[in-house]
Length: 312
Image 1 (cartoon, rainbow, N blue to C red):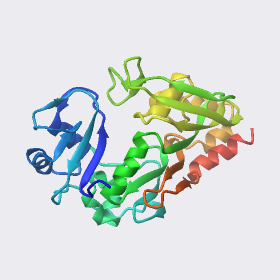
Image 2: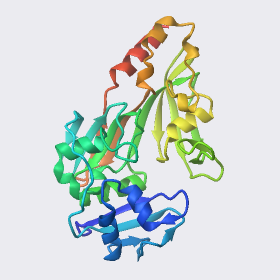
Image 3: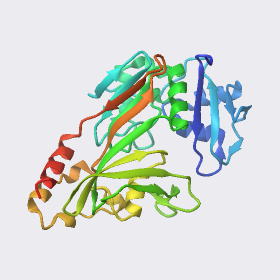
Image 4: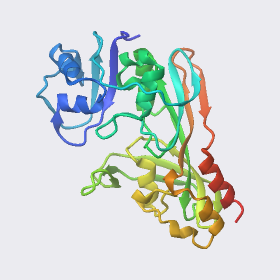
C-alpha cells in the first residue's frame, strides 16, 4: 500500500493558472504558507513531476502531495447538526441537507458541511478538504462519502476516478420522461455567467443515464445514474432536454406549470430550491473489500410534493 502520508487526487483545470493558485483554490481550508511549503519542499508532484509555484497548468492533471508536516488550517469549527448514516474507521457517510454548502469557498467560510465536520471530527484537519472526496450542490440533498484518513481517501478517490462508485440521484422534473434516456453531452462553464455551466461541444465529456420512476401531470419522478461528475451535470443535462429539475430556476424551471393545480402549488416549497436528491451510493469498502450500498430517505419537502403529485 502507498505511504500513509501521500494524498492523490485529480485536479480539474478550466483555464491555465499557476500551481500555487490552483492548489489554494482546491484547498481553501489551508493557509497559503502551507501550500507554498509543500511546493518549495518538492512535496507536490504534477503528473509525477516536481513543480514550482510559478509553473502554469493548462489542463486537468494528477496531483500527489506528500503531507509530512501538520498543515496550518484556516477553518472555523462549528457545532452544526449533520445526519450521519454510517461510520467506519475509514469513512463517514453523511446525508447532507438541502441548503448546506459542501465546503468552504470565497463567500462561504462558515455554515458549511466542512465546518460541521471539523467540529465533530477535529482529526480530519490532517486530511485535505476535511476528507470530502466529492461534492453536492448547495441545494442538492443526499449522500456524501467523507474519508477519515489518507489511505482510505486514495482508495475511494481512485474508485471514483475509475467510475467504480455508483451514484444514483432521484429528481422531480418538469414535463414527461416516459422511457430511459442516455445523455452524452459535454459540459463547460457558461461563457457569460461564470456561475453556470452549459452543454458545449468543447466541454468535458459528461454521461448521465436517466430512467422514469413515475409520471404525473406536467412532471416526472426520475432516477439518474451520474456516471461522470461534472459541475451541475444533472441540472444542465435535464435543462438541455427542456425538463429542468423542479425548483431549479437557474436552469429554466418556472412554477407556472402548477398554476392549474393549487394543491400541488401549495406543497411546492420555493425555499427548498431544487428537488434533487443523492439517493444511493455503492462502492467497495477499502478495508473489507466488500460491496457497500447506502441509501438516504427523501427530505420532507421532497416527499410532500411527490405525495401530492401522486394524487393528480
